[in-house]
Length: 197
Image 1: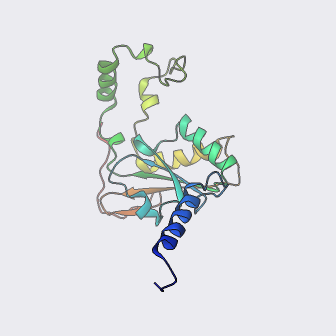
Image 2: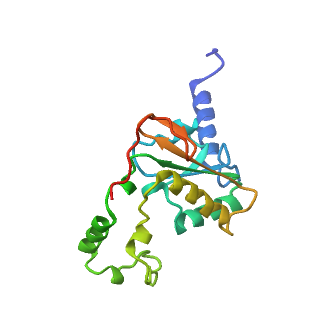
């Protein structure tokens, strides 16, 4: 630091740079990569590292199984239509908890918790919302084949009328066994875990 340059000037510049970064949404500045990532909430999935992202590069939406639900569609619709997001990546993964329990066990566990699944509100902001005649497993969305599930999530997004056709949508599988990303239908690890029925 030169004699004429004071520490407070460096700090002021740093504070201003951070303030600009923090206000990026208000200033109409999109994510660094104009990207939304939909991924499983599993703590073993290093989304940023796997995709080579830095803080500020992407919006990351995580839920159980990395499933495209109504809330994912809602969020994707908002970011692609109003925040310049041009790309969506879905990341599912092997050895997923959504493949680890038989449907009957999940259904019984849900019923034990709630008492009567027919009387439970799915969305506290929409208390009239329920699954109707559908089985609770359709709401939970357990997965038999992770490759098929990933391809299906991509198609749900592509088919949504809320998401512009110009948005690029891609899906990958993160293999926890190998620590590598791959396309659905390919394999890196010699063995991966399969769903137990």
